[in-house]
Length: 354
View 1 (cartoon, rainbow, N blue to C red):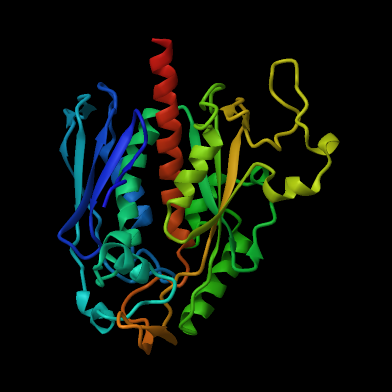
View 2: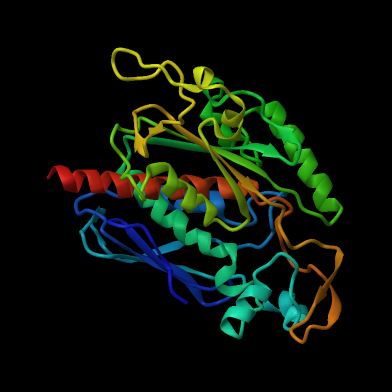
């Protein structure tokens, strides 16, 4: 399997399976001399880990990261940063019922057809457990570009939307509730909905909005390396993501040019920001904002018709520990990948100017 790496100057290569001994990665291109707060890295992992509340999977994984190289006396050395997260709570028997059966809307069928075999224990390499690696790398990237503020939050769950624009919310409220919605009233409704769906043995999806502030002008490389295109690629690499909307997004398709154009102020800022902080593929200094859509988790605790590897019709039902809604745990993943993309472009600009 190729394509296990992400990034250009700042490159993350990952390894591991959901029910293997460990997952981990190697980060190349991280500059030397950057002071690293290891506690902050672990805190980001704790935001993503399972078992943190009653509305997520109850799999108990401490997700403790061990750094193997590239950091000495609290600072990066400029060499490859190696890290590992041991899997400590595998329950492979939860998947023994589908060793030969394809789970609907999972990667079982496509992996089997492409590679001639698959890891039925939670999907192996296709499992969202892989995203823990991204959170580690993203936590380091956040410290590299500490001047940029990146905040993601749950903006909808099923048909429950947070109606306030991001400019009117306090990002510090995001971590005040289990669903990671910064509006307390909306958060309560979202949590109640997730609990209701979980009790029914079903799942739901939702959206995450991400805002990056204090982004300098000039990040992005036209023609085929535009900033918003790389952000879109990163977000669409997340398990369960089905949509990416940047700036005005699909609403912009309903507007006239006279309504949509961002008129300039004398200092180069714009009176509005329907462009989402990027013009011509290059950051313009305004807030970067986008929304990511997540489908319902594919594993449900209900009988579903499917086929096995012999093409025979059969029935399958989910077992074990699964998220009724993946959105709350995906918030730190969206932030991590945003940080990795912005840090990569930051280093590219720095290299050009040196």
